[in-house]
Image (cartoon, rainbow, N blue to C red; front, side):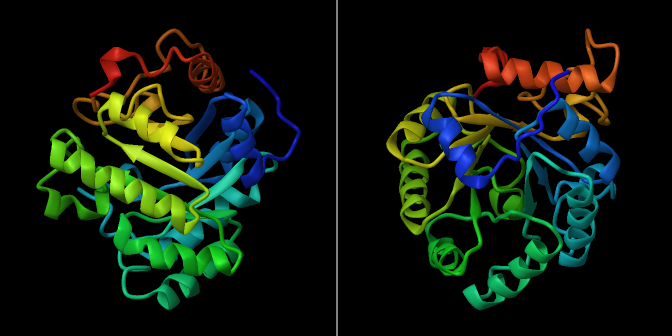
Length: 268
């Protein structure tokens, strides 16, 4: 296990990407795991609205409230000394207007977040500009957008057709121009994600988007093998071959850093 003492920063993540050093991110929802992940040397922790599924037992992320996100952000931030703390903006907390987004993002920042994450393409660019101009770093999220699961018709890979790949490219560039500091690609063909990563000066984080991204993220519970039913294609159980949770997290970080994860079997 690697012990990290230097404080990671939002500009520091960008510097890692420029230098070709992969960014290792995991979701986190409480202080105990935050302390463990921090000691292991994870670069960023995402308080994901995935907590609605892995902690709350819901079928989607849509039941998560902003109050839920504020509470879990406060828990994670209290135990984090090194990693960058990123908090999801819950469904309905930013879609109405930039002003609504700012008021709610400010609550997450006050709870300890150092960046907020929101889903959406070109339509959310004005909101991104509004937040960034007021000092709030923003992480975008493209490809599969879980808050739009009903419109998409399920948890399906995106960008597989020529038309959808072109839309993804347009959305990627719109968010980059708007000023996002980080961009998550979820369930996107590996070749497309790799190409888009080279086209923008923003670090990209893949989840089911191949090894060509600037870094990777997994749901913590997934990479520890704690999930009901069949795991998603892009998941790897890092408890296999590890004798402890700390060892599994260290193995994940190492695999992201050396490029052995994700492998071809995890890609679309």
